[in-house]
Amino acid sequence: MEVTNAENQKVKVLEKIEEIVAGNPLADNCCPIKDIMGRFGDKWSVYTILMLGRKQRLRFNELKGLISGISQRMLTVTLRSLEEDGLVARTIYTEIPPRVEYELTELGQSLLLKLLDLADWAKQNSQQIMKARKRYASKGAPNTSSEV
Image 1 (cartoon, rainbow, N blue to C red):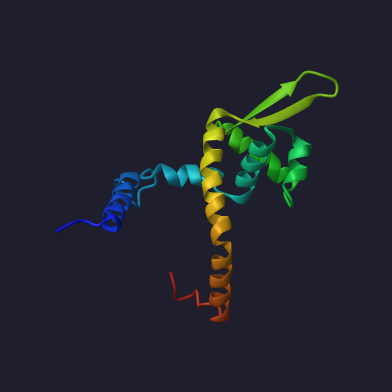
Image 2 (cartoon, helix red, strand yellow):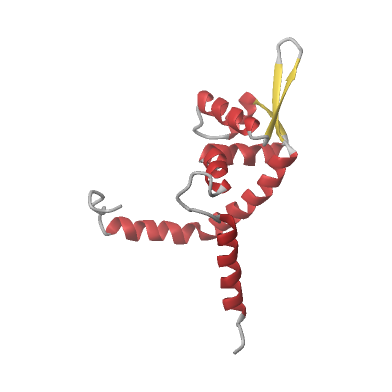
């Protein structure tokens, strides 16, 4: 019996998933994705990484101006988190007035490439997702008290 390309692809996908979630899927440390995606998987981190990738190096207020809707506090928290994870570098210039600039590190640049793939997917499928959301909303809100 010949294995089709689609079947082979499905096997590869399942093997990759098993490789990523190896171990007890309920354990806190089973999967590095859980911790890492939890840190930069929010919309502000993604926008921040995209804007730094677009402009290379930015000051705080320049970056804030490019990310619609973000508060000063949220941008500060986001930048600190990304810096802690080694995705963003913060450079302080000893001038008067002091100047601070942010840029993606090499690790941040590598993540940016993956985010661009995800952004392409989102852009290509946004209409389909919006239609699905409308269909779902037209069914009425589910009763969440009995669902888990």
